Image (cartoon, rainbow, N blue to C red; front, side, top):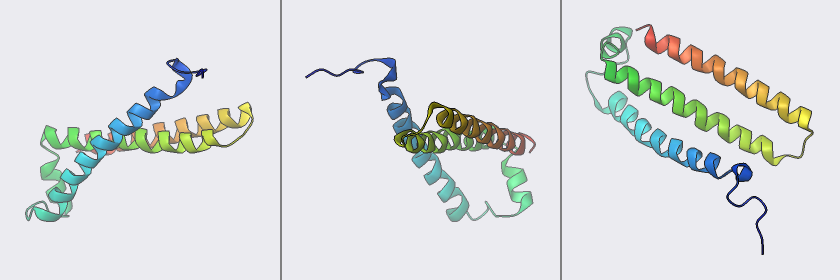
Length: 117
């Protein structure tokens, strides 16, 4: 039995690994976010509370991690679903371009929102 793409760059192993790594990081960040927002009495949900929290560089890095890893994980998952469908190369290119535009757009929006605080 031979494996045509075993060990090659086109096998998808690195995408699989990064999907799992980003998923694990997102679980940790999500749990931290959940406890911060629901079990910390002074976290509050007001603009002033968020403004005070965002003065700390740790929380900026925390939220940027959420944005970057969440976007990668989500867009890679959508790409994997699209990749499972039989479509022409033009369809794949259009789908990849749309995903890149969406990713860059939401990434820029997330960075601007977080770094403005």
